[in-house]
Structure formats: C-alpha cells, structure tokens
Amino acid sequence: QKEVEQDPGPLSVPEGAIVSLNCTYSNSAFQYFMWYRQYSRKGPELLMYTYSSGNKEDGRFTAQVDKSSKYISLFIRDSQPSDSATYLCAMSPVTSGTYKYIFGTGTRLKVLA
Amino acid sequence: NAGVTQTPKFRILKIGQSMTLQCAQDMNHNYMYWYRQDPGMGLKLIYYSVGAGITDKGEVPNGYNVSRSTTEDFPLRLELAAPSQTSVYFCASSLQFRRQPRSNTGELFFGEGSRLTVL
Image (tube, rainbow over all chains, first blue to last red; front, side):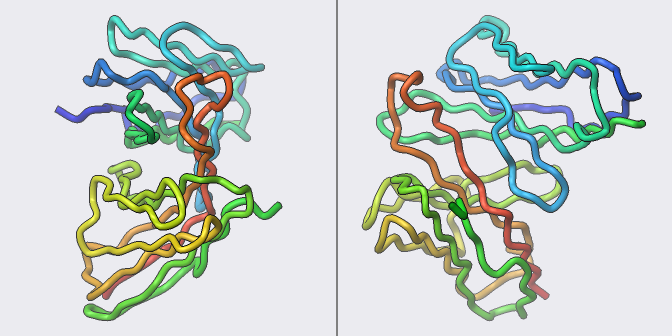
C-alpha cells in the first residue's frame, strides 16, 4: 500500500462547479498537510497548508483534514478556467529536524469555460 | 528576488554520459531538496540538505550525488546516465524545520524544473 494515494484524474468540470480533490494516507504520524498547485511545465506552488486536523479556508479554497479517517480534501468553489492545473497533496510527519514530504501522484483538473 | 533558479531547463544525454543540474536560491533558506517527477508517480525525493556541508539521501538516491558547499547552491550530479533517469527534476528550498508551525509553515519553494532525457 502506498503511503499516500491520490486519484490521478483527469477531472473535467464546467466553470462555476465545486471541485473536490482528495488524498488518503496510511501513516498516522503525518502532521503537516499541504496542497500544491502545478501548472503545465512549471514547478509546484503552495496553495493551502494545514497542521494536524481541521478545516482551513482561503478565498475559494477550503482544505480539510480528517485524521481519524486518514483523509484530506481540497474544495474549490466557483471554479475558474485558471484553476486548470495538477493538484498535489503532500504530507510530512513531525520528525527530528527535517521536512520529509511524501507527495501524492497529483490530480489533473480541467475547468471548461 | 529570483527565488529558486535551476539550469539547464532542458537537456538530452546519451547513456553513460554525466552532467550536473544546477540549483541556486536567494532566500537564505537552510534546507534544500532535489525531487524527480515522473508521469503518474508524483514527486520523489532524491537528496536533501539541511545546511552547508550536510546532505542526506531521500527515497531514490541511486545514480545521483549532491554537494552543498554554500547556503545558496545545491547541485545534483548524474554519473553514468541511464534511460531510467529520464525525468523532470525539481529543486526546492524551505526554511529551517520548526516544531511550532505558526512560526514556519514548512512551505517548499520550487524551481521551474529541468527536463532531462537520456537516450
């Protein structure tokens, strides 16, 4: 079993739709959870960050962490064509002194105008 | 600030050749990383460094070497290139680890990538 599982998509939605992106994980030591957005032929950029469990909202984006189910989600409201990208989840345990992020495989999202 | 700069952006190598991917950051970050990204496989950590003179292996270090002589630079060396090393390579940096997340999110800042093909 992979430490982090993410549906690769591609996921196509109409403009204005609510998008739900998900990752599951197996390592209960993970404490840092992140979502990165990667446009084609670019490096990933941090979109949302959550420590431990709970929800976090930033504009049209909401990140949720359910540690009891080992499940994290990213919701995008009122999706726009500019949201078309690959979304990578990443997580890391609290280790002795480094960030060792484990990345999901990424979900390709296409928002159709 | 340029952030994280990688060179070259593209390179084609023949089997058995060697090369160095360059990475430089101007954010005074202690931590630097090299990842490779293959289709459908996500990002895999090759090597990382927590400061000048200190490096350590990640998940997939075989066939690669790194050095960190300065805070700014973290080159990745490929010796005896193989087709399995065809990939997109990303360098990243971050602030020093902190157990108190409010003082440091642990964000990784990535370069734009180096696309390597080994034929």
